Amino acid sequence: MTSSFEFPTSPERVSDAERDKALQLLRDGAVQGRLSHDTFVRRMGLALGAHRPDELAALTADLPRRQGRLTRLVTGAVGAVSAFTVRVRGAWQAERLPQLLLPLPASAPHPLRIGRDPASGLRLTHESVSRAHAELRAQSGRWVLYDLGSTNGTSVNGRRVLGAAIVQVGDQVSFGSVSYRLSVQ
Image (cartoon, rainbow, N blue to C red; front, side, top):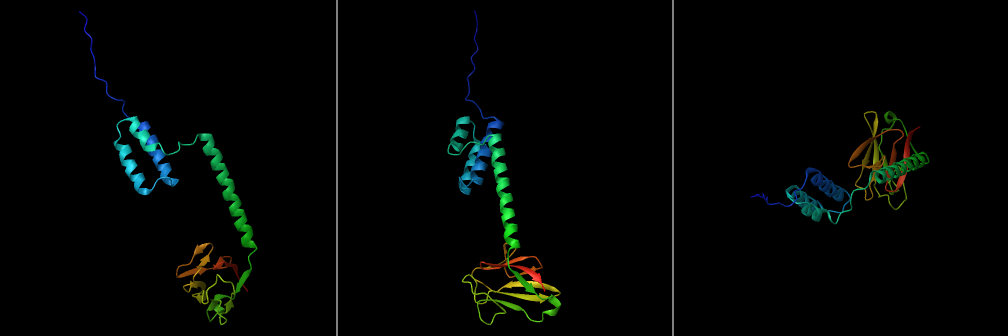
């Protein structure tokens, strides 16, 4: 008499590699803006608790699959070239900016008021400049740029000034959409 052994078969279980791949797809989807934060968090929890591959597949069905290595290399190269051209264009434009000549901080007893107001020391008539836009003050041997609550903002080297910022020769300062490169007399 021959005996046969039968074992109940259970559904296929999720491997760690499959789970990691699904988690990476969810991360990529969140980074690309395809998933809201709440959806991302909910799906990550479900992926960590998934037991079968079809459960993972359902969580990532609406997301594009990861790119191949060659596609990632080409995309990265295009991104690097694009970033380089942006830096070159920025440097070229910065050198063409008009200069704002400042006296040495030690010889400037009064602040320089900047704005559309006719009483300003530096009057800018552009519509993006506020009436009382900004002020440059000499303090402790340095120039400090204060934004006076302007509507369109004041920036130094592309960063918005919130309150005050120390500036130096060579910095690019913008009042609304009017820009200058700082230099001394």
